Amino acid sequence: PEWQIVERDGIMQLERVFKFPNFQQALDFTYKVGQLAEEADHHPALLTEWGKVTVTWWSHKIKGLHKNDFILAARTDEVAA
Amino acid sequence: PEWQIVERDGIMQLERVFKFPNFQQALDFTYKVGQLAEEADHHPALLTEWGKVTVTWWSHKIKGLHKNDFILAARTDEVAA
Image (cartoon, rainbow over the protein chains, first blue to last red):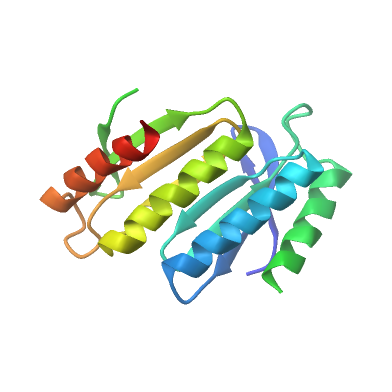
Protein backbone atom coordinates (compact mmCIF):
# COMPACT_ATOMS: atom_id res chain seq x y z
CA PRO A 1 0.00 0.00 0.00
CA GLU A 2 1.15 3.51 -0.84
CA TRP A 3 0.86 6.62 1.33
CA GLN A 4 -2.65 7.44 2.41
CA ILE A 5 -4.07 10.51 4.00
CA VAL A 6 -5.95 9.60 7.15
CA GLU A 7 -7.74 11.76 9.70
CA ARG A 8 -7.44 11.03 13.43
CA ASP A 9 -9.00 13.23 16.08
CA GLY A 10 -9.42 15.90 13.43
CA ILE A 11 -5.75 15.82 12.43
CA MET A 12 -4.79 14.98 8.86
CA GLN A 13 -1.90 12.53 8.70
CA LEU A 14 0.14 10.82 5.99
CA GLU A 15 0.50 7.10 6.60
CA ARG A 16 2.06 4.07 4.94
CA VAL A 17 2.61 0.45 5.99
CA PHE A 18 5.97 -1.09 5.02
CA LYS A 19 6.15 -4.90 4.99
CA PHE A 20 9.17 -7.04 5.92
CA PRO A 21 9.86 -10.79 6.09
CA ASN A 22 10.61 -10.75 9.82
CA PHE A 23 10.78 -8.62 12.97
CA GLN A 24 14.47 -7.70 12.80
CA GLN A 25 14.18 -6.08 9.38
CA ALA A 26 11.15 -4.13 10.54
CA LEU A 27 13.10 -2.95 13.60
CA ASP A 28 16.10 -1.94 11.49
CA PHE A 29 13.83 0.06 9.18
CA THR A 30 12.27 1.82 12.19
CA TYR A 31 15.73 2.77 13.40
CA LYS A 32 16.77 4.13 10.00
CA VAL A 33 13.59 6.20 9.62
CA GLY A 34 14.13 7.43 13.17
CA GLN A 35 17.63 8.61 12.27
CA LEU A 36 16.25 10.38 9.21
CA ALA A 37 13.69 12.05 11.46
CA GLU A 38 16.39 13.21 13.87
CA GLU A 39 18.42 14.69 11.02
CA ALA A 40 15.34 16.52 9.71
CA ASP A 41 14.19 17.49 13.22
CA HIS A 42 10.71 16.32 12.22
CA HIS A 43 9.35 13.24 13.97
CA PRO A 44 6.82 10.63 12.87
CA ALA A 45 4.99 7.94 14.77
CA LEU A 46 6.59 4.56 14.03
CA LEU A 47 4.61 1.45 14.88
CA THR A 48 6.92 -1.57 14.72
CA GLU A 49 5.36 -5.03 14.63
CA TRP A 50 6.39 -8.48 13.38
CA GLY A 51 6.92 -8.02 9.63
CA LYS A 52 5.67 -4.47 9.31
CA VAL A 53 6.19 -0.84 10.25
CA THR A 54 3.44 1.77 10.05
CA VAL A 55 4.93 5.23 9.47
CA THR A 56 2.76 8.28 10.18
CA TRP A 57 3.85 11.82 9.39
CA TRP A 58 2.09 15.02 10.37
CA SER A 59 3.01 18.48 11.62
CA HIS A 60 2.27 18.78 15.32
CA LYS A 61 2.35 22.59 15.38
CA ILE A 62 -0.29 23.06 12.71
CA LYS A 63 -2.12 19.84 13.65
CA GLY A 64 -2.17 18.79 10.03
CA LEU A 65 -0.11 18.29 6.91
CA HIS A 66 2.64 20.60 5.70
CA LYS A 67 4.91 20.32 2.66
CA ASN A 68 7.58 18.95 4.99
CA ASP A 69 5.50 15.84 5.69
CA PHE A 70 5.38 14.95 2.02
CA ILE A 71 9.13 15.50 1.69
CA LEU A 72 9.79 13.21 4.66
CA ALA A 73 7.39 10.61 3.28
CA ALA A 74 9.40 10.56 0.05
CA ARG A 75 12.63 10.23 2.03
CA THR A 76 11.07 7.36 4.01
CA ASP A 77 10.46 5.56 0.71
CA GLU A 78 14.14 6.00 -0.13
CA VAL A 79 15.09 4.32 3.16
CA ALA A 80 12.85 1.38 2.23
CA ALA A 81 14.19 1.12 -1.31
CA PRO B 1 1.88 4.81 34.14
CA GLU B 2 2.41 1.14 34.89
CA TRP B 3 1.33 -1.84 32.80
CA GLN B 4 -2.34 -1.95 32.01
CA ILE B 5 -4.45 -4.70 30.58
CA VAL B 6 -6.36 -3.40 27.58
CA GLU B 7 -8.74 -5.15 25.21
CA ARG B 8 -8.61 -4.45 21.46
CA ASP B 9 -10.79 -6.27 18.97
CA GLY B 10 -11.51 -8.84 21.65
CA ILE B 11 -7.81 -9.49 22.35
CA MET B 12 -6.43 -8.88 25.83
CA GLN B 13 -3.10 -7.05 25.74
CA LEU B 14 -0.56 -5.78 28.24
CA GLU B 15 0.46 -2.19 27.57
CA ARG B 16 2.72 0.45 29.08
CA VAL B 17 3.87 3.90 27.96
CA PHE B 18 7.52 4.75 28.64
CA LYS B 19 8.45 8.45 28.63
CA PHE B 20 11.74 9.98 27.43
CA PRO B 21 13.13 13.52 27.17
CA ASN B 22 13.54 13.37 23.40
CA PHE B 23 13.04 11.27 20.25
CA GLN B 24 16.49 9.66 20.14
CA GLN B 25 16.18 8.10 23.58
CA ALA B 26 12.73 6.78 22.69
CA LEU B 27 14.15 5.28 19.49
CA ASP B 28 17.06 3.68 21.35
CA PHE B 29 14.63 2.14 23.86
CA THR B 30 12.53 0.74 20.99
CA TYR B 31 15.63 -0.86 19.51
CA LYS B 32 16.66 -2.43 22.82
CA VAL B 33 13.19 -3.83 23.48
CA GLY B 34 13.17 -5.12 19.91
CA GLN B 35 16.44 -6.96 20.53
CA LEU B 36 15.01 -8.45 23.72
CA ALA B 37 11.99 -9.57 21.68
CA GLU B 38 14.20 -11.21 19.06
CA GLU B 39 16.14 -13.09 21.75
CA ALA B 40 12.88 -14.30 23.31
CA ASP B 41 11.25 -15.00 19.93
CA HIS B 42 8.19 -13.17 21.21
CA HIS B 43 7.32 -9.88 19.54
CA PRO B 44 5.45 -6.84 20.83
CA ALA B 45 4.01 -3.82 19.08
CA LEU B 46 6.30 -0.83 19.65
CA LEU B 47 4.90 2.62 18.94
CA THR B 48 7.75 5.14 18.89
CA GLU B 49 6.89 8.84 19.07
CA TRP B 50 8.68 11.99 20.21
CA GLY B 51 9.43 11.41 23.91
CA LYS B 52 7.54 8.16 24.36
CA VAL B 53 7.27 4.52 23.41
CA THR B 54 4.09 2.49 23.85
CA VAL B 55 4.93 -1.19 24.34
CA THR B 56 2.16 -3.76 23.84
CA TRP B 57 2.59 -7.46 24.55
CA TRP B 58 0.16 -10.26 23.74
CA SER B 59 0.30 -13.80 22.45
CA HIS B 60 -0.79 -13.93 18.83
CA LYS B 61 -1.45 -17.67 18.78
CA ILE B 62 -3.91 -17.65 21.67
CA LYS B 63 -5.15 -14.12 20.86
CA GLY B 64 -4.70 -13.13 24.45
CA LEU B 65 -2.33 -13.05 27.40
CA HIS B 66 0.01 -15.87 28.39
CA LYS B 67 2.53 -16.05 31.24
CA ASN B 68 5.22 -15.23 28.69
CA ASP B 69 3.74 -11.76 28.14
CA PHE B 70 4.09 -10.89 31.80
CA ILE B 71 7.67 -12.15 31.82
CA LEU B 72 8.52 -10.02 28.80
CA ALA B 73 6.78 -7.00 30.36
CA ALA B 74 9.03 -7.38 33.41
CA ARG B 75 12.08 -7.66 31.16
CA THR B 76 10.95 -4.53 29.30
CA ASP B 77 10.98 -2.67 32.61
CA GLU B 78 14.56 -3.83 33.15
CA VAL B 79 15.54 -2.33 29.78
CA ALA B 80 14.00 0.98 30.87
CA ALA B 81 15.68 0.95 34.29
